Image (cartoon, rainbow, N blue to C red; front, side):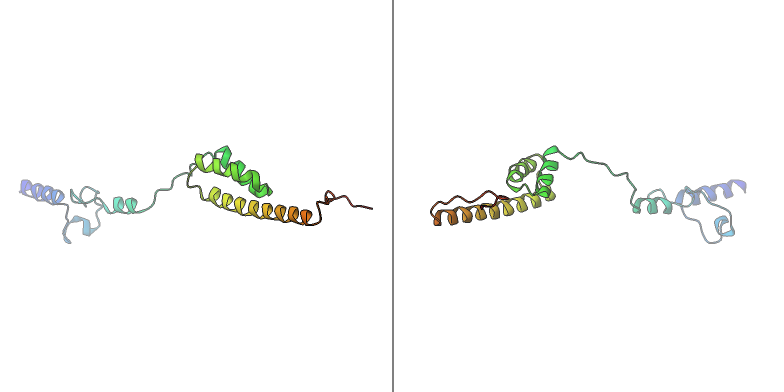
Length: 139
């Protein structure tokens, strides 16, 4: 008789199922091996697999070209920034911050060049009269 009870218990454990009238439903704890089938992970394992694993952020070292590019644009040194930002894109292609900084540097450098050209054209129109340096006034 004892052999039959042990055989039934082993069969239930091997199948992974416990019926509503067995020991687990009466209040006795079950082990994960007794409550799972061989092909399905335990409920705790499923939940752990679905939850994202918290990882420590990995700090990526920023290349000097990228730092210089962003710094020059921030300082308003647009003409210098264009070349530096181009070099930064070669080192770190696809960096959206550098791409935006390059676009701004090119736009602002073009505006400055246009203003300088307009100033030169005005000087030529006046017969080549040199303009006083900024900050100096004529008597």
